[in-house]
Image 1 (cartoon, helix red, strand yellow):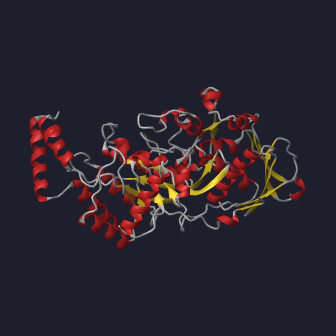
Image 2 (cartoon, one colour; image 1 turned 180 degrees about the horizontal axis):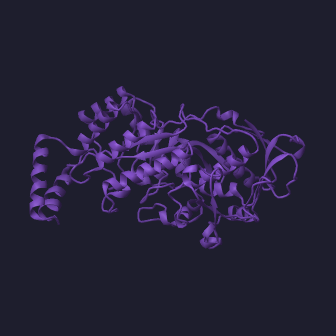
Image 3 (cartoon, one colour; image 1 turned 90 degrees about the horizontal axis):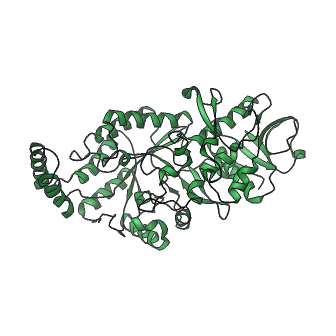
Amino acid sequence: MSLKVLLDVEIPSHRKRIEYVLKNFSLLYKVDLNFVNSYEEVSGEELFIFYGEDFKDEGKGIFIRKSELAIELFEGRKAYDEVLDVASVHFVSLVAPMIPDEFGNFALPVFFKTGEPVFEIENNKINFDILSCAFYFLSSWDERVKNKKDEIGRFPDDENLLVKLGVSNFPIVNFYFYVLKFFIEKSGFNVDNRKWNGKTFSVCLTHDVDVLRKWSAFGVYNEVMNKFIMGREDIQARRERFAKFIYFFAKGEDPYRVGMKKLIEFEKSQGVKSTFFLKSGRTSKYDARYKWDKFFLDFVDDLKRSGFEIALHPSFETFNSFELMKEEKLKLENFINLKVNGVRQHYLRYDFKITPSIHDGLNFKYDSTLGFNLRQGFRCGYAFPYKIYDVEKNVELEVYEIPLVFMDAVYQYGRSSKGIEEILVEVVNLAKVVKSFGGVFTVLFHNFVYDEFDFKGWDFIYEEFLKFAINQRSIRRSCIFYPQNESKLIQGH
């Protein structure tokens, strides 16, 4: 369907923000938008969206009242919790059909409130700036304006407003868009999800290959000294582990390399293709050395022959260096003799001031870095690919973000006490949340999931989740995203 949009916004930068949000709505749902400049361009019988202050109660308009507070906050480059107490955010209980049936009585966070009641359903009025709320999360506004960093230079999860509100396990922007969809459908129009290569729900299966060998020189030292001689387990457990290590080491079977083979073999057996993010450079102690030996070259050839995607996992210091990332991208493309379309930053290091412009300048089609560092969930509040927005230039970049929702490392290295079955339930439940909105669920399993020494049980989580995804008919061939007829979605610029 086609829908006219009238924006009563005097500030050009804010108009562009709202246009950006509505474009993303149109990428998720089959609603083509036509921006107009006056009421005279809207007939009395056609449905349209009005965003502004002075709404004329005529025709079939959906009225979204704009928030001056939101505009002041964005123009002043302030975070919400720097201006107001987080406790000031309202929660409105919603039920179907305003939200998917699966969520029952869901408490939707509402800020930039502009009136009471929040929803005037009969009058098609939304009395909070739902579009500015969506922009706040889609733009990762907190990360743009707060100067908080963790010990390795990443934005801390706990500074994210979604985390502070306790809703980071839900794609809140998808909820906002679903509410807008409800008002359109309430007016007598059917709104369907757009499909990602024929699917209304997709699982994007990915693997980061951080380390090629478990038993490098350091790995052997660690196994002998830290695990056996100085280990904290009882002596019998240490002897058993050491004997197992000697057995596999003598046979030349490294768990990480074995894991790489098993990932491909299992996915082939299930008729699945995934994306492998490979390294080509080392700029820090946080980067393992990659040796492009016969094993690895054969592994890459197998990926290429079998139709898997190869993307770049650039080194630790590349997130703010165009030249370093350019060098590593070219090096990987020369190694594999293919164009590299995707990227995910090592350690999820990402600085909105420069990283997206580097990706854009190097002509990556997509990035898949934006997930939480130490928890699963929705760092951007969204479960669908979208183009990154440059808040300084007020333009949309060409590179797509495919948000990362679940990463195995969140639960490993002593970060979680949860059991294997419990973790499997969590990843499946997250995927079901995304499915409710017809979204894209991006999941990351490293090449050590088959390592029985330090990651026992993760092969079970990985394989059972993959079987679940296959049963949902949701697995994609690769992460590359081609929106359907994007150029036709937005008119009137």
